[in-house]
Image (cartoon, rainbow, N blue to C red; front, side, top):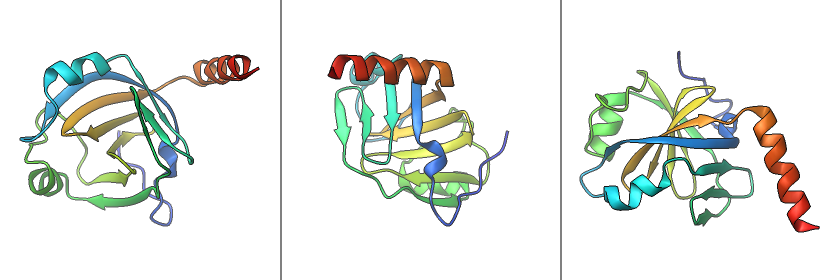
Length: 140
């Protein structure tokens, strides 16, 4: 597993439907486990128009991506180590409007949101198609 090189500084490869699997770690200042644990199993939807995570909807992102040295990035910006996150070095970090996504590989990211670090896996294409069909049926 390696990082994906960002195309022209854009991290649009993370657009899609994701499932939160676990909470990996917390920054020194962060949401607590009582707020983070209920998000396990929730959908994370990243689109060009918005980011949806739990009850939060964030505005359109610029998807700026940068390859960074993992331990320096985590130490300086979040005051956490890579021991529990298990990110590659270097890692591609994508700036979203309300979070950061660290790309482990094309099907797994670590989402940094409100000081919590969440393990997220890409939902299968068939699940994404079912989700889109369900949403269009609800709108009718």
